[in-house]
Length: 585
Ligand SMILES: Cc1ncc(C[n+]2csc(CCOP(=O)(O)OP(=O)(O)O)c2C)c(N)n1
Ligand SMILES: [Mg+2]
Image (tube, rainbow, N blue to C red; front, side, top):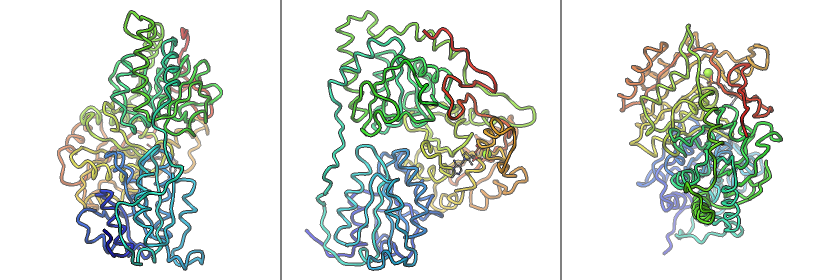
């Protein structure tokens, strides 16, 4: 059955067939034909954002909260280039989004036409794949392919750039579309020989660690991970992108590794004799100086993307596959290994000494912070937020100190409950991402934990939230500074504070008034004794967005810290305070 329609109508029809419910975007000349049939769609809701960057991050938040592909839309030229940052962000964090952009008419491409930008060229290195469509009849197939590529294998952003004439021309609509993707066949089934080898190494190891990255939750493998962890008794470290994938409260959880990780997690990786790395990419923020990372460890590295394996660290046992299938197969193989070895305690290896060592690190160097006599400790605010709101909410963070404290002090028990910009470190991520999360999961409580610097980059989406009925809650951790940069200036630039003071102490802007101007409720809190009441008040408001302006001390610092470019062995627990590592063997 074919139906005659315009390319623009075909685009909307294809989105409906892909079961797209929400599109975030802003119209303009080149994409205008697509916005006309969008008005008639009863299935696709278009959310008019205030900046295309917000559309992109909202699509990312939506995708991560729902497990579906997020969609954003923009016009050509500046509309499309405003999407570049969230596309890069989605690429670094493997978030499945489809970005649809209008392009000038095909006859004008290459002439420096009004609002022309080569967005396919610009996004080539930051998309999983991108398309330029110049014929109406190619639109439905390209949309089907774009969603397939974005959502399968290692997820990522796909851009579809459609020329104005392709949107305007008529074509015969057919669905479903035969996809033409020769060479795109992600490997999901792991090789059994590699799995057996990994199980053998786990059984023989004395100091193993499960090093868990964002890929494990993306594969929906948290339940399997728990089974594998408990079967083996191995310690588990969850990276920034994996917070919540394994419950924080679980006795085998040693915390987050990396630059601002726990001493126990960093120590575990450094002293391990085996790392079972699952859906993780040995990022420099985790490894520290690479040639001193986990020097005695053999590496089992499982990832859906073969390009990740041995990219930064040689893998002794490379496994290409979907994390859920890998872990499920590992469970079977480890059980067989236990049976073959007749292990008395029902576990594969003997890790008693290892746990004694790690327990000492946990007891001696727990996460902690100092209170300030003349101001509110930001960590206290975030800790109370986690306690009062609980683990069933979603927490989105911006980038900076507040992001690290959000990673450290909330307490995550559910996979996917912490959503942040890990790979790119994109300031301004939190508010629009929270909007996308709340639209994808309207019944959930959604908090954005934002910095005063980040908040000033994308807070205009509060207007979108207020108008569209998306009651997110925002905790601005207002230290009046680009705090993380200031922290580096304190530590590495002799306290010379070049261009990090945002002067928010003068209430420019006044975030409470700003919130009210956007139709939200604004609350200010600058005392420890008022923190609980402010959070409770925000929790009681569910019809409009709420912003709490927490005025916190500017000198609070994120600890522990591995200084950039140094070894994880040189982690500082506090300023000039290094942990004692002995008894590691
Ligand atoms: C778009 C962008 N520009 C610059 C940076 C560099 N940067 C990283 S953290 C940071 C400070 C963020 O300030 P704020 O939002 O107030 O958070 P805080 O560290 O104070 O908690 C800056 C400028 C960045 N990550 N992203
Ligand atoms: Mg700040």
